[in-house]
Image (tube, rainbow, N blue to C red; front, side, top):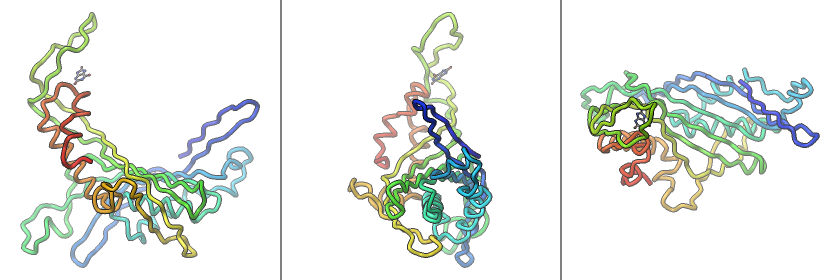
Length: 283
Ligand SMILES: O=c1[nH]c(=O)c2[nH]c(=O)[nH]c2[nH]1
């Protein structure tokens, strides 16, 4: 996949080139003895940097082949200790790409996670769910987008992380009205005080930027970062990137609770519901 936009500026032409690999499918099992973890991801990894010559002069010496980008994604999925947390895996992959190649200054990594939840069983060992059997209990996806910015130098990498949910399909059979909308010669929709309401929810939230330690090992596979502590309320344990799994669980739970409990006046108002922004779990 490639994405290049040419802009004419005066008599000069500037090129904003970005390219990479889309739809890299990852399925990883991590075994903690008999207790297994499974993640399934669709990964996109795009690169920016000193790559213009490949577009303007057919100079492929600056091109990390998209096939290699795919192989790097598989390799990190195998060796990264962060593979089970999509935010951290995306940060690790983007950091490796920008650190490994001197002329690559930015990486854009998207990780779409498909649901595999443990099959509920009665456990006697204190665990919740089956140790190694999973089910697809929803078509919604967790979507994580990371930008690694190396423009200020390879030892000053900054990571921007957004996360969210796509395609969360919901329905309620009452508790929804839609009235007082524009009525004119094109209107056939009746006003109703009580209707069935179904929609697909997409939501997104942004973490504070993280400062990434330059990998000092020769192969640039190390990964560590510090969270921006400017906002004291958003630290490593409450709402920061290291807390990403709990944040994602809260986001899904709050969204479903508010949808269920809200007296909806419209799709528009429900998507900005005071019930959502006033929820104790939403910072
Ligand atoms: O909540 C709604 N918002 C709309 O904009 C709309 N338009 C429509 O036909 N039904 C609805 N419902």
